[in-house]
Amino acid sequence: MKNIRIGLLARILIAIALGVMLGHFSPVPLVRVFITFNALFSQFLNFSIPLIILGLVTVAIANIGKKAGKLLLITVAIAYGSTLFAGFLSYFTGAALFPLLIDPTTSIENISKVEGLLPFFTVEIPPLMGVMTALILAFVFGLGLATLESNALKNVAQDFQDVIVKVINHVIIPILPLYIFGIFLEMAHTGQAFSILLVFIKIIGVIFGIHILVLLIQYCIAGAMVKRNPLKLLVRMLPAYFTALGTQSSAATIPVTLKQSIQNGVSPQIAGFVIPLCATIHLSGSTLKIVACALALMIVQGMPYNFLQFAGFVCLLGIAMVAAPGVPGGAIMASLGVLQSVLGFDEAMQALMIALYIAMDSFGTACNVTGDGAIALVVDKITDKKEKKDLSLSQTT
Image: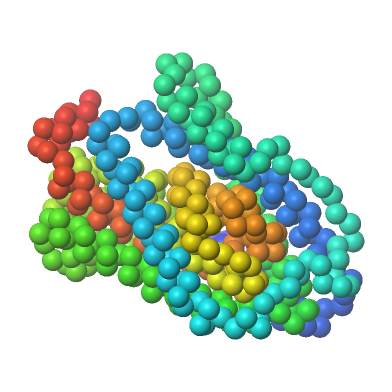
């Protein structure tokens, strides 16, 4: 009999359900055991965040730099602009709707400091560097590696990325359900769990609406540029959308996205360049999810927020997540440092962000890859025949 593997989303949902159910009648010592575990894991997570940024972003920037050229710059600019647009649309929509949907009386107290629910002990694990230091260092190393002829340092950076990916896949991701179980066990014990779950449902509904709106806008712009019906273009990309829902991976969906983009009239050489590149750098769906979730949790917590604060957050988020699609859970992992440094999220709010994000992970990925098809249409329209011919020659050599 084959072993039955439960996906991460299912494990997260089971952890939340068990935490809510058991939290109401679990004895305080048992709850404190999980609080102690969460305190230790959160310290390890804070230690890992700068290393995750350094490991993932350095190699991504170096790989992009190797392909430097006009077409690359155009594609990166459009993809980053699309990511920023989705983030700002998410912010303005959330700022308008969330105060109406979220009852301020459900505001969470700092659950790690509720009287009688303190960890048995804590261990401090200071990070090697700050989040912004890691991000700047990743850029400096990435751009530098792109110009080197020698592969020695590049191989070191790649090996370091492989180590970080193993830490994410074999340590952080497997432990996350237990960590989230402890968070909801504690919230249920203190009577806060159901109000938070109600907020989750409202946030998910709004985010789903935003991601459909983003896709419609992307294809309206692309359709206007190529003078074709945007709805027909979008419908033709639905196989890629539903494939991404199932695989939860931009990279795994590339063959389908590529095929559907060519069926939409994109030249094969442009599609072969833009689609794999955008699978790494175009993160409109992931960004809008993280921005909306962060804003909602700040409103729940009664934390002050403003547009300038979120403008900086969105701009950094689009950069920090540039290598995230290649790693399961990579987007939310890469964003934790920016959430902490720019928005002031503590460990409890980071855990809620992880739970919220993973609950909608497949929808963000589907939005990302479907939007890649719109970008391919735009790039194909603005690329002249000579550039397409040159690209075709470079792809065959």
